[in-house]
Length: 261
DNA sequence: CCCCATGTTGTAGG
DNA sequence: TCCTACAACATGGG
Image (cartoon, rainbow, N blue to C red; front, side):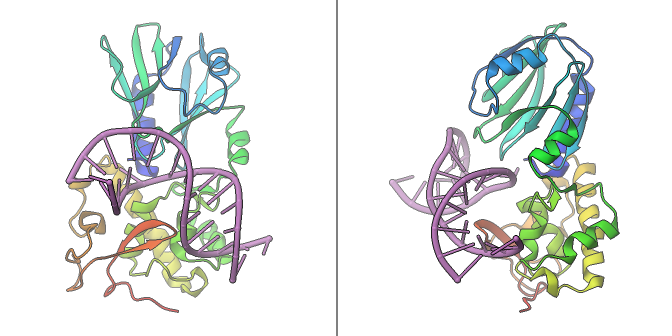
C-alpha cells in the first residue's frame, strides 16, 4: 500500500534488517520490474552491502558500499519482506541473500513495481524529474510550487514532478480535511487555504506514519475510513460521493467540499 | 464474467 | 506549453 507514509515504513524496515551485510547472491524470480539487465544488478550489488537508505517520494533509494545505488518503486502492491530459513514469499520478484543466510525479498503481486540502478540520488532525481519529497519542503517552497499552477488541485498534489510522495488515497484525505473540492482549480485557492493545505498535508502523512499505515487505526474523522459511495461523512450530514478524476477513483463529501468554478 | 484496486507512462487532443 | 483524459501494464479479490 505504497504512498509516502508506506515508503517511510519500508525504509525503516530495510534499515532495521538488511544493512551492512554482504550480499552473497541475487535471485530473479520475476524480471518484469527490472529497469536494467539482471546481469547489471548482479555486477552492481553482489559482493557489496546496503549501507543506508533515503525516501524520495514514493521511491526508496538504497545506498551501497559499491559505486551504484539501488532504487525501488513499489507500484500498487509492492512491499519488502525480510526472512530466514524458509522459501521466498509468494509473489517475490527479486530476492537478495546475505552472508548470514538471511534474505530480503522485493515482493510485488501485480508486478507494477520497478527496480532501478542509479549513480546517485541527484542523478536519479533528475532522471525521473522528481519534485520535492512532500515531507521535505518548507511552507514557502510549497506555496511557490502551487503559485504557477492552473490545473485541478488533486492533479497537482499527485503529480510526482511537482511534489513527490502523494497518491490517490492521501490526496483525497488532505483535500477533505481542508474542505476543498478535488476538482478545484489550483489558482482559485486562497493563500490562506493553501497554507492550510500545507499543514494538513504534513499532518495526514505524519499520522499515517505514526499509525504504521494501518488504516483501521486511523481516526474515524478521516475520510479514509469512509471511502465508499454513500457512506456517512464523519463531519456533517452529507454522504460520501465517488467520482473519477484523471482516471482515478476520488472520494469526497459534496456538502463539506463545495465545488467552485 | 464484470468491475475494482494505494502507480507510472505514453499518447492524443484541447 | 500546459492541462486533461485514457489506455496499457498485470493480477488477485469481491
